[in-house]
Amino acid sequence: MLVRIKHFLSGIAVATALCATPMWAQQAAPAQATPGQPQWKDRAEYDLVDSIGKEADANKKLQLLNQWKEKYPATEFKKMRQALYLQTYQALNQPQNIYAAAKEILADDPKDVYALSMISFLTPVMTNTSPEALDLGEKAAQGVLAQLDATFAADKKPAQMSADQWAAQRGLAEAQSHKTLGWIAMIRKDSPKAEDHFTQSLQKNAAQGDVSYWLGQTIIGEKKVEKYPLGLWHVARAAAYDGPGALPPQGRTAVNDYLTKAYTGFHGDNKGLDEVKAQAKTTALPPAGFSIKSVKEIHEAQLAQEEEFAKSNPMIALWKRIKDELAGPNGQQYFDSSMKEAQIPRLRGWVVEQRPKEILVAISDKTTPEITLQFDAPISGKVDPGTELQFEGIGKSFTKEPFMVVMDVEKKNVSGLPAAAPPAKKPAAAKKPVHRR
Image (tube, rainbow, N blue to C red):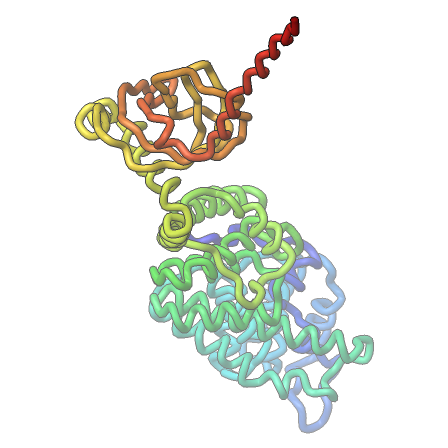
């Protein structure tokens, strides 16, 4: 799914959005011709162009430009007229005409930065994926990059701009060019090149929700498990970021739905997703070492943990395997065939309750009774809850709801019971007094 820009900004904002009439590409029309320079055909042409320069209404300006073109098709100020057409179409939010005007300029001057920037910007916006359009967009973006040093030379900086602002303008122009080149590579299914250009674009301008989404989609589309977390990060950025350059709210909602599905499929559930979105919202590129565990990695870690636990706690691990079988759909059958009237291996548990001839024991959580130990005689002494016992015995019965295994045990096979108190001594018989006669 591609997120497409479906509308243009209006008014003065369009200049910023399109890099149109960028400060580094503005062209001022001379008030009058000078010797050795292009000449006006007559005074009427000069007056007409002068009126164009003074006209603030874009629609009226376009009408005047059309008059100029009709009355003076062979003007010596063709380049100026082309630039004025481009700026006027820009003010009118007419992308198709902007594109056509830029192409006309490039036909005469293939290195015109203003026209190159317009073609570069409009290529992904208009989503024309014909080979010719992609080739032209690629050349335009490369042309802007090739002229960055000359375009943004210190002596070209407008007086009203600071050096930092001028550098920022260069960064935006560079980001836009890499964005276009990344989009073209993505359309051509050249994922490595698309990933490289999109990343460079975000490094120069982090405020690009569409680039983050395209980059995430590109990486996920490579179907390399080790890179999947990186792809999820960039999609999360597109879904969460709501500042300048963000996707529209409806687009972010759709992307968030896709993200939730993709994250859950990879991770197994949505745990940790909110944290990833919160972090991605603040920065376009993930921190070093960023990772999200896959279902396979989580499963392997659980197996390793269970294996280690089994080595350290073999009796509890044995009970877990037994209980998993008993709690399954064939639990009663398993008990009848494998445990009933059979010797159950030694287990370890903790006392929950003592009865005259029974002790209820918990193993899984130390508080929930799971096994009833039945003795053939009353238990002497008090066995406190929480006392640890080790025991073995014969399986007698099983119920799944509530879960309980009953075992017959002999006292000698249960360790941990308190020692029986020694029998009380009988008081010595009193000696009969001796009567002397």
